[in-house]
Image 1 (cartoon, rainbow, N blue to C red):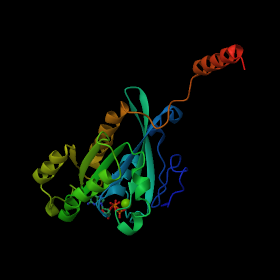
Image 2 (tube, rainbow, N blue to C red):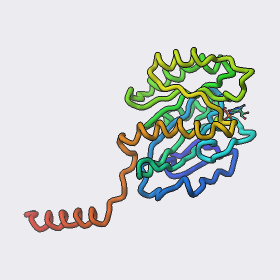
Image 3 (cartoon, rainbow, N blue to C red):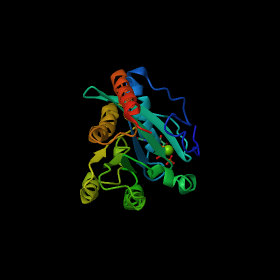
Length: 234
Ligand SMILES: Nc1nc2c(ncn2[C@@H]2O[C@H](COP(=O)(O)OP(=O)(O)OP(=O)(O)O)[C@@H](O)[C@H]2O)c(=O)[nH]1
Ligand SMILES: [Mg+2]
């Protein structure tokens, strides 16, 4: 389900227009305690943003995706060093007409950015500097991790973007480069690695939502409150 989302509702819901995405239980480890990070996936239309995010969150290749309108949300909770981290992934629209009203929302409070191009489309690769520029224009700070991903590596005979050129561009921005395929099942773990690389980088960052306080924390806060009211002279 694609949406022109209602501000405020956006953080608690998983939407998917083309599919009936259900997150399998092994992806969820006590989500109530998970820190949440917002990751946006950006790039030209048709490069495979929806398929990549679906592969990571749903575990399979999404057949016959439709062009994303506005944004589709997906999420997956991962366990890193014993901590649950919820990755909230914004699968953005590549087509200008489907994204223009949403651009401000994409970049607001973003924790990490994935720039995707299609290795069989030189034009999608040449668009990357524009996407990177758009991101910077929206005040995304230099400390927000960014990754470049070349998708559709399974189409070996149709490759138009050599790895060397992609590596050169990635180096010029100091971004890590991944080449992968959302379609090839053998690449499933590699797709995971893209998102997990970001998750590890984000782990040391500020969370969007803090952990629920424990009973001890609550008792402590309550005692402080009681003491405060006992000494209050007003
Ligand atoms: N061969 C191959 N095809 C892919 C791969 N990933 C996506 N596709 C195909 O590429 C087309 C576009 O995929 P999407 O995921 O919808 O592309 P998108 O970037 O989300 O496009 P917008 O929503 O319009 O921005 C579809 O026909 C997919 O089946 C891949 O890794 N390999
Ligand atoms: Mg899409």
